Image (cartoon, rainbow, N blue to C red):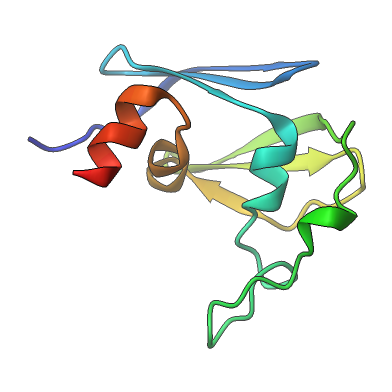
Length: 108
């Protein structure tokens, strides 16, 4: 079975990000969890894939100020810490989904 990485609805709230996927799946992401998982060149070393962003430096109250669609495949966030270079492909977001169902699928 292939996973559909198309998002039908994006909702940004005080407690994070909610995505509704075209296959009906619902994902909720805590803002800090998403910010820590930014994969831009400032946050992840390009050649080794080593994380450069220290999770302890991300404020507990970090939140998404705004978002910009990137084509039909990704979204870019403007964070309250003024970080804005990360692009979050929908495929990556689906793989980062913290729900029990997605965690179980990732482990199998």
